[in-house]
Image (cartoon, rainbow, N blue to C red; front, side, top):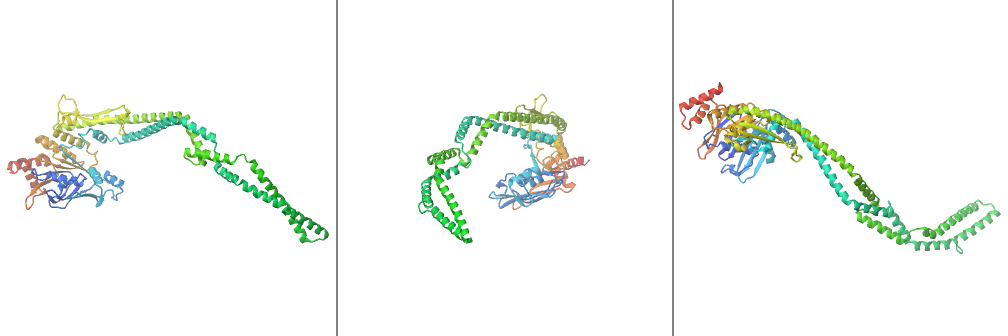
Amino acid sequence: MLSYLNIRNIVLIKALEIDCGAGLSALTGETGAGKSILLDALGLALGVRAETALVRKGAEKAEVTATFSLSGADHPVYRLFEKQDMDIEKGEEIILRRSLTEDGRSRAFINDRPVSIGLLREAGERLVEIHGQFETHGLLHVKTHRAVLDRYGSHTEELSAVAAAWKDWRAAEEALARTRADLEKSRTDEDYLKHQLAELDSLAAEAGEEERLGDLRKLLGSREKICEAAAQCRELLSGGGAACDLVAQAQSLLEKAINDITQENLTGAAAALDRAAVELDEALAEIENIDSSFDHEDMSLDMIEERLFALRDCARKHGCSVGELPQKREEIAEKLNMIAHQDEALEALEAAEHKAREDYAQAAAALTARRNETARRLEKLLLKELPLLKLDKVQFVAEVKSSAEPSDWTAEGADRVRFLVATNPGQEPAPLEKVASGGELSRLMLAFKVVMAGKSRIPCLIFDEIDSGIGGAVADAVGAHLKRLSAHHQVLVVTHSPQVAAKADCHLVISKTQGQETLTDVTPLLTAEERREEIARMLSGRDVTEEARAAAEKLIGSIAA
C-alpha cells in the first residue's frame, strides 16, 4: 500500500507529509482547496508527464516522494526490478521519488537509485491506479476488454498455450515463405546455373593446377639457358681431355701399379676412382636426358599461358581464387540438385505449416471456450452488483466473437472481446462510450473493480470524485462498494459525498491556509468529533447547523452499526 507521501513545492503545497493507512481513506475539502493538486503531485512520483506549472512560484525545484509497503515478496514490481538488474530485495519497501526544476528538468529515483522516467512509470503502474469520473482505465477502450476478461478468468494456461502455438505457426509460415522465395529465385536462376556448371565442367580445373602450371612455365621459360649449361657439362665430361677420360687414365695407371706391388693406399685410391667413374657416367646420362625431357612435355609455353588465363578469367567471374574453382563447381552442382528436389522439401514445409496452423486453431478454440464461460460468469456477477449501485435497468453483455480468418489471429487468440451495455429496457446493447453517461460509467467501473477484487495485484486504488453529481441512496451505494473494495486493496477516494466519507477508515481534510502566501494543507481527522464536524460541513455547507451535525452523527453511526 501507499504508506507515506512527501510533497515539496508543488503549486500551492510548500511542504506536506501524509501518512496513509490501509482500508478506505477519504480526502475531502471545499472546492478549490487543492484536492486535484494532491493527485497531480502523486502522479509526478508515479512517472506521469511533468509540467513546469507544477513547480511552486518562487521555488527552484519541486519534489515528491511516495513510499509503498508491500505484503508479498512475489509482487510484479519486484520482477520488474529484477529484470532491470536493480539490487532491490523482494519484500523491501519501495520509494519512488521525482524532482522537477523550474526550467523543466526532471530526475527520477527508485530507492535512491537514479532511473529513467519510463522505469519510474512502469513501477508506478504496478503500484497505483487512479480513476476519475471521465477516466475509466480501459473500460472505454475496446482494446483492453480482452485483457480484462482474461485477467478475471485467470486464463494464464490457455494464453500460454496459444502464445506458444502462435510462435510455432509463425515460424513455420516464415520457413515456408523463405523456401518458396528461394525456390522461385532458384528456378529463375536454373538456366544460368546450368550454364555455369557446363563452363566449369569444360574447364575441369584441378586442385593445385595453378601452382603446377606456374612451376612448368618457369621451367619452360629457362629451357635455352638450361640446355646450354647441359651442353657445356657434356663437353667437360666427355670431350677431348674431359673429366671422364682423365679419370679412366688414372684408373689404368693405378691398376698397373697395383699389379706390380701390393699397396693398400693405392687400392683405396683405385676404388675411389672406380666410384668417381660410375658417378660421372650417371651424371653424364642425366645431362644427356635434359634435352629429351623437354621434348616429352605435352604443353608449350603458349599453351600454359592460355590455360592460366582461362583459369584466372573463370575465377574472376565467380568471385573466387583459381584454387577455389573445384569447390565452386560443387556448390553450383548442389544448388541444381536442390532445385531438382526442392518440391519435396516444399511439400514437407507446407505440411508442417498446416499442422502448426491446426495446432494454433485448436489452442485458440480452447481459449475461446474459456472466454465464453468467463464472459457468462462476469455478466452474472455484474448484473448482481449493478442494482446495488442504482443501475437496475442497465444490462451488461460481455461479447466474445471468434474469427475464422487467419489474418485476424494473434498471439492472444482469435477472439474480439467487447463490453456492451443497454441503459434502458428494449435498447440493443452498444459500446459503453456510446450509451453510458459519465456517472453511469464511473459506477459501472466501480462494479467491475468489486467483481475483479483479488484478481488485480495493484495494491492502491485512487478514485477522484467518481461520486460527482450523485447523492442520497446512490452515493451511499457507491460508498458501500468502495468499502467492500477496500477489503482487497488500499482505497483512497477524493469525494464531495458525505455518505462516502462517512464510510472511511481514515479521513483527511484538504484546506487552504491564508498568510503571506496561500498554501494547501492536509489535516488528518483523528477524533470522532472532528469527523462529525467535517461531514456536517459537507452536508450543510460553510455554516454548520445542529441538524447537519445530527445527520452526520447518524451517517457515522449507521456505518458503525
